[in-house]
Image (cartoon, rainbow, N blue to C red; front, side, top):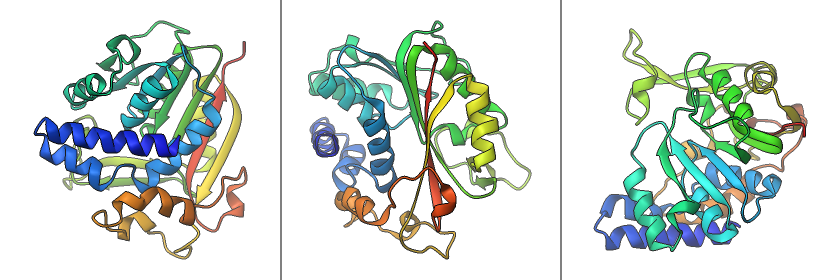
Length: 274
């Protein structure tokens, strides 16, 4: 999967450049698969068991993975996000890579209030998304993911992790900042780092699903610092080798976060009883 996704991301960059979308095209060429997304996509792929013909829902994840599942696996992937920034770009990439529109529907959806019917999807996944929903929106989204999942299906989620709960605020310079609401000091909610208790109380229990796997990943270096490698790693120059750096610096996944010196990411595989 990793080589295929990497190659598809490079192709996306070339297609966008050919369409004179210079900024977005160069972004894919400079950083085909980012450092953290490389790890998270790998976890979702390894535990997702995606198959041709399955109906899959992507809630807000980076879109190259949706394109890969639709094109290379043959799944039917409903690719969604809360804003419409991606629709024109991935409609173009869908056509350029030969993916039929019916195999990758693209639409705006709010994960807290999905428009889909109950039990409509064999698999649902959300990569590095739920932590950005303010208030109790993460729990509302988890409940919706459980609702639209078919009996016997799997829900795959990645979120940031920390030994204790930690909310992060920043300037409203990201595309979904409008849903976060202003704070008095000019900063808005950006993301939540989940503790083990948070995972259970905010995501697993509200989903109504069964936790088949809860895994944790950290970094092998900078273990005494709260900063992450990605925060000090330049994109230009190193971007094309981010997947290799991820393989080198990320720890193996473990079900015991206390075994890691610096746990940073949690992966959930939740299932709906048949």
